[in-house]
Image (cartoon, rainbow, N blue to C red; front, top):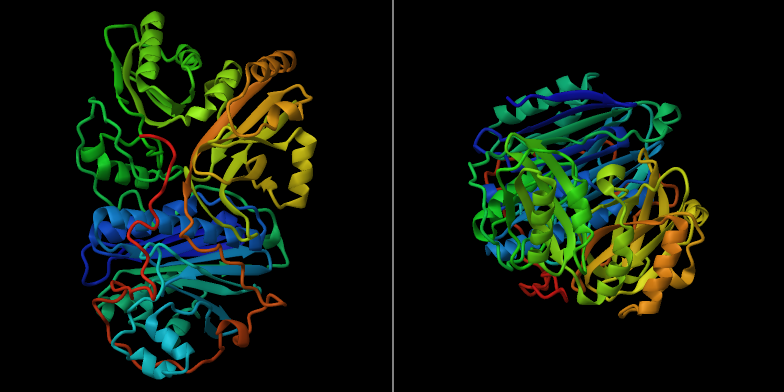
Length: 635
């Protein structure tokens, strides 16, 4: 039996487990827990072993990187947006594999005395309060739609032969609309998230009885054992979260910690074949949308999937798999003295024309230095030549330099990059002060009705000194978000475009881009003022006079410039980000959310070995290329 993970995160008591079941040999379920931040997720993948694991893993790993603010409604909207982005990635992967891939998702957020649930599919969230079990979520199945429309009773639906056919899931169609509900938390509440591997073989009253246990771990162990005793034809995932008193310390600031993963999202869930390092040019092939963040498994998994065809290897934890620059390859310098000083390489990168490049990872081993270079450039040959010369001149032994994560610079940006590049921040010394939540953001109608690719970036400027923040679009349009520290603080106090990033000592910045292409958020640190005329510029090439003015101001103020890059892709076929569905009082009531205390249990259910593997066709099928990204970058 799978080991139950039991831990305490602040005022939450957690018990987490995912099991392949009694019939299947592999687990396509996945879960993710950020208990210190009051955030838990269950995903049930479908489509067969590799496909189902890819789908549920993508959902959990993406949500593990969701930037949370501490505000319930805002975080629920962020979760919905990240799920919709995962839908885009999975749908695109499904189209490329020419197969049917998808996943359910149910997410729970708790913020002090209130909670929110975000879901798509038939993975469920239950709440046991005062001895009564209520189902918070409503299954997104065809049969449930018939119940809602009054054509079937709940008793008839329980035994319906098509009860496993989903009406909504992540990645099965180009469009996805999650459902969100907000409610109140009471002292002693016990939440349970589960895949349908549990709810299809156990009745609600049976689940309720087991939830009477004061020990969440013992409760989860017993629920899993009962499911296995019933033959558990599907994977079973159970997360139990017990709450303390919401009027006490539970309302305190969130405490970020490393996410906990299980099932297909666990690093050890997938076996990795031996891979021979690739040293040949990768050509101009386009890699799948990238995945970046703190999780190790997904980057390795995706890297292995595309390695044979694209020559793309894994690096970092959940790495960027960006569109490779034509001719990108590995640099190997031999027969020189080993050294770990990266300053010569950083200086060399600063000399490459029409580029903005960073050393994202570096390690030193017996064979020498290994590095991964990220950013944008127009010539992989120029990057390779600069690094080769730096290694030779500095007599540094280099084992491997990976250029595969470099994207093609939009030509319009050259004048701005060349003007700012002499003032690049030495990030190998200062660290990365800008971190994008994702490497790809789709242009779509946002919740505020604005049509844009909405990038979410965590900015951690130095504690001392002043700074300015600006957006640089792919058409070379420069838009000033904040001209100084005070301006950004003012925006953060309003909380619409900028908010404080919990436990990061920085800010969560929302940057909107109306056109597709590789774009950036720009952080300029140093002594102000930062003139508006320099940092507000229309699309098009910058003049030589502008470059001279920027250089003069930068030298006078001791400016340093940092950028983070992401691909803004066309996403006009994707649906609107759903608004949070909250009752006026934010209280759970049967009339608004379907939670009916003490509802009669449905009749005994018969295990169905095919449950959660069939998805109903959309009412209006989308074209097969509806979610394919469009870019103005020649590859």
